[in-house]
Image (spheres, rainbow, N blue to C red):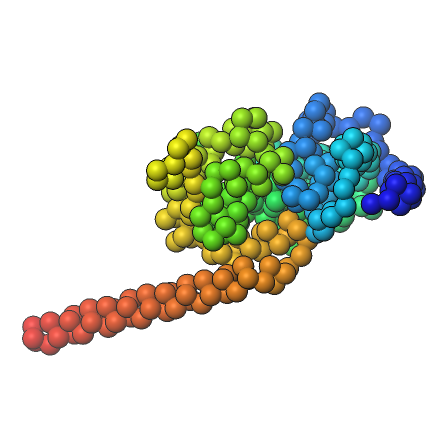
Length: 324
């Protein structure tokens, strides 16, 4: 992008933030319970699209690949500006606090209410509650793979639901690793159902997740995807035959194949890129085919169950007739 155009964009961003600062009042002394001393870590932990700078966590907009040559120093400077601009936005500041609040409620298995969110987090920014809640909901979905839904519209109570509806150990205190799992399953799906370990980490690296670097949200990512999710049978991690030096690859595990549709994974990836599943034409066709095959399998299973029930009922009726 030409330097002149970048300068105009930066100026436009500064004007937008100035307007936002004039409209969003910050409390003089935020509730210490939800004022993380290192909020940048929480923000930096949010997964972002592969072509998106790690600091731009709120829009998750679909971006196009930059075809022009760009000086690396200039790129680093631009990314730093994006991160700084994002963190200075008072609405984004509230988003980070609200995500932290929701995480704590999830850990403690406590009811989430609109009143508590307004009292403990939003405070004097009530006019922006809808936008703050929307962005926080996106973060919870993409980072943790959980949906925030209103379960009581009268009392305005909310609950967090795991997108994949699978069960983790009840003793687990961390947020579920569903978001990380869905990212890995998406890479495997894109690579024709088998992805090398290198290909998986290339994508995760672009989203700020590294094999040998502890992640604020996912803990030890390499352990999660090569041990924990393998043990739960959501992933298969195996050595490539005759590879020298040894290399490894990932495929969907048996539990993932049984519980998770390709369309659900594609919808997740489309949301990361702020687009629709249809935008990934070839993958969408495969996902539709998978949906049809799953529907046929469910219909066949229902038919078998109905036939067995009918046969059992006839046997009972026949036995009763002979007894008389």
